[in-house]
Amino acid sequence: MSIEATKFGDAIRAHWAIENELHWVLDVTFRDDDSRVRMDQAPANFSIIKHAAMNYLKRAKDKKSLRVMRKIAGWNDEFLTQIITK
Image 1 (cartoon, rainbow, N blue to C red):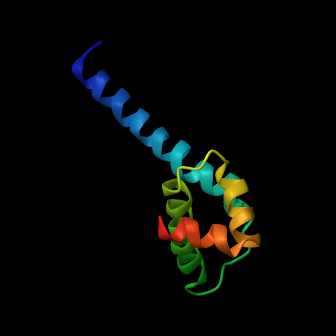
Image 2 (image 1 turned 90 degrees about the vertical axis):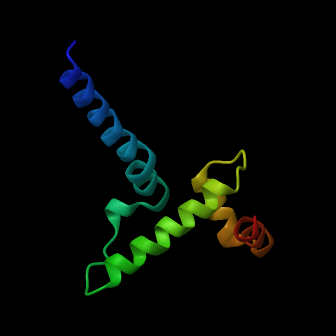
C-alpha cells in the first residue's frame, strides 16, 4: 500500500467517523431528517440548539442512551438541571 493510499484511507475513515458520531446521532436521537423546519434562519438556529443539547447529553456520561436521557430531561427538571450543570 502506498503512502497516498494510506492518506486516502485515513481521510475516508475520518469522514465516516464524523458521519457515525454526529450525523447519525442527530438523525436517531433528534430525528433530524424528519425535521420540517425550513424557513429563514430557523434551520440554523435549531441545528445549534440540537448540537448543544447533544453535547450536554454526551457530557453527562450516564449509562442511558442519548435518546432516553433526552426524554427523561424533558420530563424531569431535576435530571435536566443535573445534565446542564455537570
